Structure formats: C-alpha cells, structure tokens
Image (cartoon, rainbow, N blue to C red; front, side, top):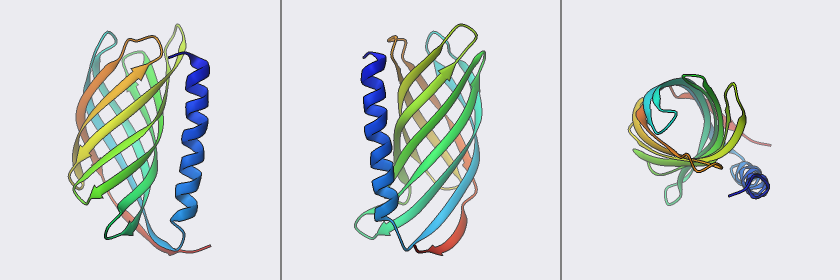
Length: 155
C-alpha cells in the first residue's frame, strides 16, 4: 500500500468520523482518559506505553456504543500518534480502527491500526499495526481507563 492510497483512505476515515459525530447528537457523552502498557512484537518491538483519550456515546440498545479516540505512545525510539473510531457492539467488547502516524529518528510513516479490546476500567487488548513498508507490528497489553460522564449534549 503506497502513501497516496493511505492518504485517500485517511480522508474517507475522517469523513466517517464526522458522520458518526453528527448521527450521535443529543446523546449522553462519556470522556474516557487512560493509560496503556503493552508489548509490541516485530522488528521495532519492545515495551510500549502511552496515554489515550476517547469520547464515546450510547447509540441505543440494538446499536451499542461508538466514539472517537486519540492516543500518543512511545516504543523505544518510535513515537506513535493514533486517531481512530471505536465501536462497542456489547458493553464488554469493542474494536477500533484508524490511522497511526509513526515517527523515529530516520523517518515518518503512516500506518493503519485495528484494536480488539474487552473489559471495563481495565481492558486487555490486541492491536495490529499495518505499516506502508510492510514491517507490520503486533501488540498486546492493557488499557486502564476512567469513564467520566459528561451528561446529555444536544446541538
């Protein structure tokens, strides 16, 4: 996958995030700040740590919950910033998807990440990071998050 294709996919992804935010008007919103620790397997592998903030809303009994997230992480010399959307079909299980911007001393890279997680407050996870140069990373770890309800927000 070349960088030009990744840019188009990122634009489509960000449009989907805006549509999601529009559809979720007049809902109860929750801010979820947290920390993460884990281990990344692959050529640039090692222990990873970071912070993440997500904003989620309940979409209804049949739809579950959804939201957006931003995380900043360190893995040795790598610095990663991940922006994504997340969906919870069940209160204890979720998945997120979005672009990850990777920076080290030598270069910058754009990747796609998908994460599967479960739990509440303490959430074990698995994440696959698909880089443009085919050196994909696989990560396991735990999020520790504190949900803070904001109440009902309407526009």
